Length: 293
Image (cartoon, helix red, strand yellow):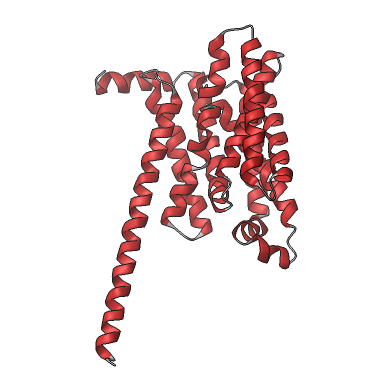
């Protein structure tokens, strides 16, 4: 496939209404993921996102089996998961996530197996089906984006404080447990939307990688959120546009773009670290030359 065919195909496909739906969905998802990703990285809850995604998958698979709205099922599954994890995993986060995740996956397998319709519909829950975003799912996504972004903006300071230094925050009178549960619900809502679009297996590409990339290049929390939103948008929207003409799964491109951005950011962080170390060594040498003992 040469470039001109690729461009003309992509141009034609962008004019189709379901592709426009998909573009709006991926742009919203980029915003949603970018806002919450750095906080997940700071709180070291990457594994919890994976667990939440498996329960969102369970909810979506159950909804599919019983003929209900898949988006609604995913939301319910992931919020239940989030609350469970926040309550069970106060002390042993890892093992709680492992237990919840395996249970969710087991039930998902059962529901997908029992589903009488086309297996590709069920399989799309694992790998994402952005082109199949219905207008009702799009409205759910809009509502979730407004709720999550609004909550993060309103509770930004206590959320950041409780994430960066929970012991100090608790001593200062911040209700850390409430914030943990509330944050878990926000993560759950975000995850439920990502599951529909990039699939349960690849939620990490949008919910962790942009945040990890942003944190690698800046220590300023607000800058980290802005960068993470940009990285998530580039991954989600760019991945969708690249996947249209070849007809490959969107998730392949989304994960690749987000991983490349992550590698570049890690490289920048490493080079900066080396530069800072070199300057410090040079400064120490100068000090030593000026004041020899």
